[in-house]
Length: 335
Image (cartoon, rainbow, N blue to C red; front, side, top):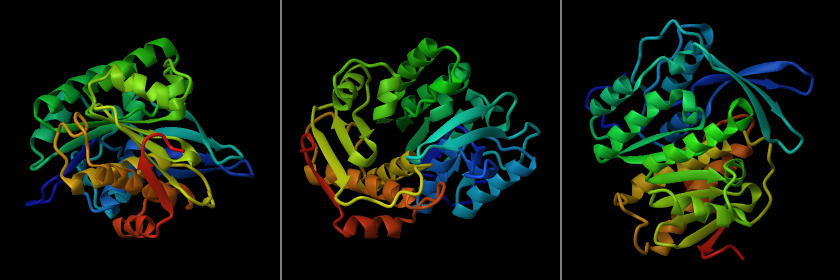
């Protein structure tokens, strides 16, 4: 529930679930998670007034998800739990620390909503500037929920941020899935995508940067953030500028669960702090500002990967990491 006299800065819509993470002994440990859930917590931990729009279950897992959000300061648009059960994701982490997912998503709580309820919650959120979605919300089966809501947010003058966090292993019709993701990205002002996501979209181009340019060219977004794992990240603008940032020394990576979500939280937080215009990126931008956005995003992700599971950093921790000088950045393609 939104407290009185609180101005919401960001509203998030999408999955909140339990990650059943397989340990070295073969046993599974239940952990609160989901890309949009992680993003919501990460934003709140960095001081952003965040409203999570989807319902949560009254079951034990749903109560854990709600408690985790509330503890971090996330506001719930649907404070009363629903009877539907909590979504589950079975997660196996490989030797490189990268997770592989299998999802159980039929008749679940976070999908027990519709476009009208999402839109009404945003209309009631005083001061709302940005809406974020992506990941499992990009399923074609949920098009009637999210596409009308996204259209209403664009019409209402809010900045739309979409994380093209693809899950092709759980989508039975990959061609239909790709087409729907690309259609959804037409509503975005800001796109976040990984090199792996670009491969899954089967876009033309010899490199990830080529594919990212192609994607930005066929969408209406002003800005695209491309994550490249240990090679850092790039920020592309509609005007044609490219910026990069990366860690200058190797990190001790425990796992990468939630890294992309924390990256996006760092980026969105920095965008809000900078007070960017809605069309920022359509013309030449300030290089120092653009590099600063990437540095904040990289720092947020870097802190996450050095912790077990998704443990988003505070704003002070992100500022300290950026201030340490360990992140190199520049304009143009990374040397």
